[in-house]
Length: 303
Image 1 (cartoon, rainbow, N blue to C red):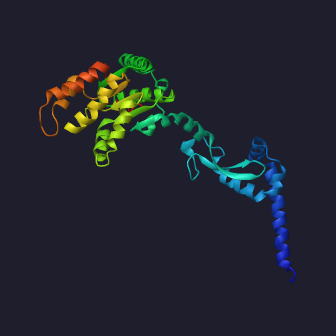
Image 2: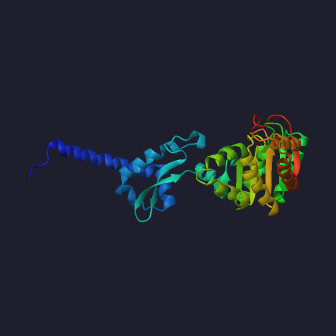
Image 3: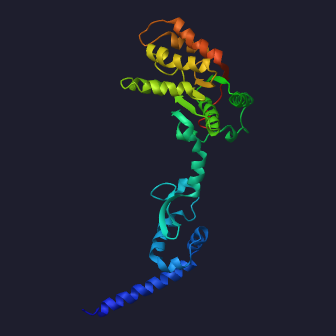
């Protein structure tokens, strides 16, 4: 057998010294000490897997001193390569404390059976609304919305663009979802386009059923869609009828008052004037809902 060369022996000695030096550094490292203490890992593992622990430190380093998800430097936002111990050290992709907090605030998303709700509104809640600089008219609407939500009553909220209608509706929908209820939130113009795209497969019927059966539903921006006989008579009316007959709370937001909405549904894209069909839609909404007006400056810029 060929004897190792002097260079090979020197290299082996160097690696041994580097490993001993690393072990000493790891034993003094606060992050390693916390990792071992938290996971009840025997200190002997520092000597067993020092280079693996060194790699963990390199992977974890961007997380040290991090002030929030907006500052995250990891490849996958909010996650880092963690180590667990069950008799052996194992690598595991782990959510950081900031991501865990965010996931907790968004856990109710699982209760949305239909959702066009933007991610930025998933954390909206009545409690988070800053009221210090709001006018009395807005505070009255806010308190009324909170009461109607708590009482499982329907609401038609209309007013100027940017006045905060969608935000209040999102607060209510999130509140019911956090209570474990199955909810639906649709942006109505988008919903109508989606229904039309699903006609060929028949999947639109499933979406309609989900809108009908949701324990709490929001139809956002109603009156902004292009009216067709189909989306008025075969989509909207069946949803309204079912929810009305089963006393299911339904919130609407719109830039149209009721009179304007009646005109909107009187004319389809074919130009036909169908006042009776429009009257059916309006009768359902007004029978279900408390009508509330929300005006004021653009709150989108305020948030």
